[in-house]
Length: 281
Ligand code: PAF
Image (cartoon, rainbow, N blue to C red; front, top):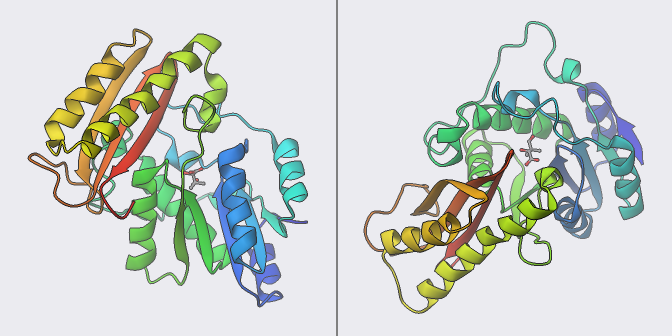
């Protein structure tokens, strides 16, 4: 497994390997959710690269960049075991050298939901993903559906900038009990982890009501906020029922496909989760 540390090294490796290539971008501290993306990349491409880069520009000033969990050695071991061909492992100085001043902004899609609580987040994600796609030159890139808004922002930027990479969304991997896998789950105490199961439970309740015929977006929002609100350790940030493509909040009945998403804090940890309602998930 090659370890490539600069865009020049990455590009030279890619040029020498003219086969179909999959990329799984990560911030490391790999869990089963990441590994499922890597496995899909390995299955669908002749070669696969994973990138590990904790991207400072997608963290706000009061967020957890400094204490974001890191385990480079463990990550490289897992990627080697899976059979990844190369890991792109740039430093912060390589990605954002002195004088750096170019950012990618996806305007409408970045503004609601996560964008409201994390105003610089998607500018940082869009910028780093664009840089990764340019450096690696993959045919396909793999992202989790847990980060539903991120996936839509990345699809939009790939389309708008004519990037020749197919953006592949992969199903959320859940722990036993339903908690969506996330590197930040590592910060949860045992009690907080147990309390956080309320998120997937609340989403499942709303899904069940939708399956029974409930179409009012407001009724579904109330079901989810009631269930999460009843958990004393959880502090709900938002519940949204939005058009699955545009992420515009739905005020009346759901007619097409909707994204039901939420964010909540458990102690210091902010978690997100979502389900798709209707066809075409
Ligand atoms: O989802 C993540 O881990 C990150 O946001 C990503 C896509 C690797 C960009 O830093």
